[in-house]
Length: 422
Figure 1 (spheres, rainbow, N blue to C red):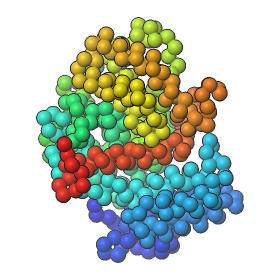
Figure 2: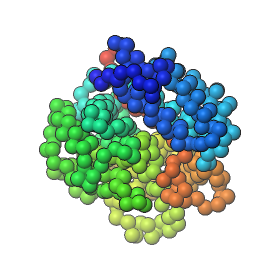
Figure 3: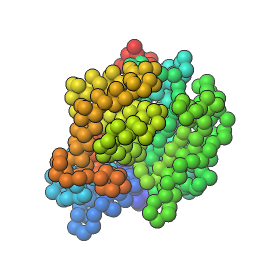
Figure 4: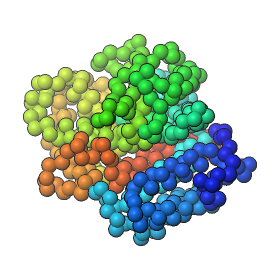
């Protein structure tokens, strides 16, 4: 990816300059470091503010001297010594700083962006290679960021599949079932331009996405429906999806391509966790499963189960499944190849999930991590207490787990790399 080059700036200390091959400063790195400093400034005031400013200088220096290293690993000890005792919303200031450092690392180009794309076809026998798709998404997002910056708008786009893709991945990186839907989640800064008709980001991104998919063998017209808008309490539009429904789309067999942009969340993990927590809470508070079956369409019960099963991988860094839960996870994934459409099979698996108390166990572990509330201490509402302000101590392990997972997917099929495709 090419970068617009910034000249020297008094806003960025010398140690903060991300030096590229030509010895010049990456525009994106400069924006990332400024955003990092602003994020730390918003965390606190008073005497801690000056200490945070000094810590930001330390992180910038580490980024400049060792750009390929894990920034958090380099500053962890100092951060925890300085800020672990400062409480901050069900955690510590050190947790918040770690989260901002992880985001900075990805914005400086760490992770999958620096790896070569898989040398495999994106589509094979109606199945999509998710690693190659993620590389495509990230390249388009980076290009869109630079284009927006050239128009005077600064943002960062954190992209990835909505968490359920783990549900359909084989060991070679291709989906287990025929291509059905591609949902791209895109987190962005609050100031990212957005209107009910899409706005500049969609106008730039979507045509290029159509072109890239056509080159990979899937042709769709550049005709998108702007749907599912969400507003905050102040009436500000914070989320919108651009969707194209394939001709084969039905309510029962959902085939669509969606780009879902949220400017209430800066990262994909926040978007995915919000969805998962709302689902988990609804399932946990479903006390009459006979009534659930009576009032719920079979297709909706199936998608509830699919979302619960597929999104479990998102919290693997937080929740350790029991042996019985792991066995059930595998069985249900296999059943989704076809037999799950039979109501007896579908509700038979729902019965096993309920009897195993899997939903309940997961609910209380996440309540403890997010809010410090132990099992049965009090009732917890994820929707009211967690979703709007996701605590870093929950996001951090999810982010690290998904980074490793997506990097592994991206490595499948790389010629000359360490990964071996099966």
